[in-house]
Image (cartoon, rainbow, N blue to C red; front, side, top):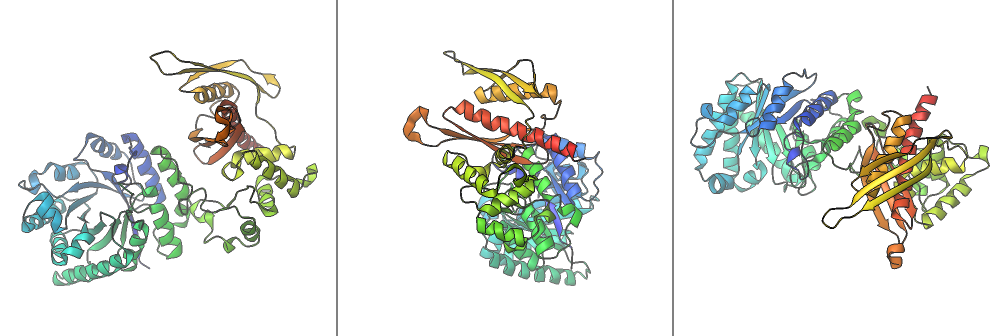
Length: 540
C-alpha cells in the first residue's frame, strides 16, 4: 500500500487560531518534536511576511532534520510585479528551506471580486510563480489551490485551468484546499477523483511517468475536516495537510492527532512507524502546553477521556475484554485506559482503580463496598471524583492506611490588601513539616490569595525537594458554588488541573470557605506529584 505523506502546518496555519501564538524558540521546539514524530513536511511559516518567521528559518538552518523536510510558505507573485522581483517569492528561496509552498486563487469569485484582476492574469501569476521557484533549485515546489472545492463547484473549468497552470510549470504537488470548510465528504470524494483523472491526463500529454502528487488541506467549519481528509485519501490523495490538535483559524484545521492513527491503524497506510505512533499523545500535550491551551479531554485518540470508562457495566466488561468498549488499544498512540469513579460507579470501578493504584484493601480490613459507600457519601457532600483522579488516589490510600504524606501543614496565613486606586495585593506565609520536622516559615506574593498560597507552598517544598516542582503548573482552576441559596456562606467546590512534562492530573477540595477548598485541592496536587516521584524511586 502506498505511503501517505504527512504535511504539518501547525507553525503557520495553526497560529492563525484565536489565542494561539508561538515565539521563535517555541517554533523550533515544536519542529523538533514533529521531526521526531516522523512528519514528512513541516511548514515553518511565511518568511516574507514577518520578522519572527524569517528568524525561525534562520535558526532552523542549524537543525539536522531526521525525518522532515522544512517548508516555507508564500503566495503567487503580486499582480503587476514579475515573479523574479517579488519579495515574498525571493524570501522562500533565501530562507534555506528545501521545499517551497505557495498558494494561488482558484475560485473565480476571488479573482474577479477580491483581487479584481482578469482570470487569465491570475493563471499567468500561478504559472510564472511556480516556474520561478522550480528554477531556483528548491528540492520541491508545492502549489496550494486555495478555495479549490468552492471554485470547482461554481466554475469547474476555470478551477481545473488553475491546476493545469501549476502542473505545466513544474509543480511537484498540488494541495486541494477546502479553505472555508464547507464541503462534505461525498463532494470531496467525487471532486478528488475527477482531479486525479485530470492531472493524470496532463502527465500523459507531457509524456511524464510521474504524475503530480495530489494533497488535501481541509478546515473544520462543518466539523468534517478529518472525514474530508480521509475521503480524499480514499480517492487517491497522497499528501494530507493538518495541524496538531486541529489548531487553526475559525474552527480549526484537520487534526493530525486523529488523522495519523486513522490512516495507520484503521486503514493500514504506512505513514509513521509503530514506535513513533506511540509518541502521538505526548506531542499533542507538548503542543497544547507550548500554545498555552488547555488540552481537550475529549479529543479522540489522545485526549485524557478518549479511553475513560465511568459506567459500572462498561467497567465490568472491559476488565474481561478491553475491546468490548474500546475501538483500539490506547497504548498504540501513547494513551492509556482509564476508569473514573463517581456515585454512578459500581464495584468493578473500585476494583479496577485498586489494581491500577496497587492498593490491596483486604489487607487493611476494607472492601470495595465500604470504599464505594464512602465515595458516594463524599460526592453527596460535593466532591466529584470522576474529574479528580489525584484526590481519589489520595483518599483511597488514606482509607487503606497506605497514604504517606510528603508534607504536613502546620499553618498558613493569607493577607489581602486593597488600596483605593490599586488592585488587591496578596501575601501568604506558610509553615509545613516534612517527616515530622518543622520547616522554616516561608512567604510569597501572588496575583490573588490562591496564587500567593501556591507560590508560598512551592517555595517551602523546594527547600526539601529541589527542582521537583519546577515543571508543575496549573492548567485549569475552577470554582463552583454548590448551592447558591446560602449566598456567600454556600459550599464551594474547587477543581485544579495540574500538569508536568509527561502527565495531567486533577484534584478537588470542598468547603464553605473558598480558600480552604483551594488549599485542599492545591495540597492534594503537590502530594500526588511528590508521592508519584517517591513511588517511582522505591520501585527501582
